[in-house]
Length: 116
Image (tube, rainbow, N blue to C red; front, top):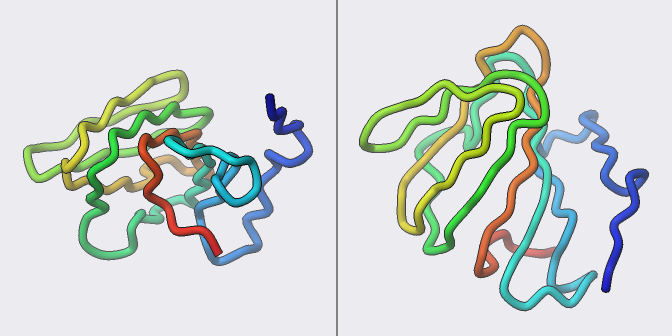
């Protein structure tokens, strides 16, 4: 068992990168999944251009704020408390449409985010 304490889940958004890996192979031995947080400032888009597309299934939970999730098939507005399932292979992007930062907790399986 690995416990990621809340002080490790704190996101310092002074960093240019809006993603933070919380559970990984390198640090925690995760073989088939990853988890992390994304913090988007008002108007910020993730990824900055194009779509994110990976073979992994993804689930993300909106901790706070409001985001427009766009795919090549349409878009949905999701907000605090909403849970989103993204099938593997589905191109997608997120845009923070709130006037404050939006925090997203995400999970993918299998691994997709490169580790440094």
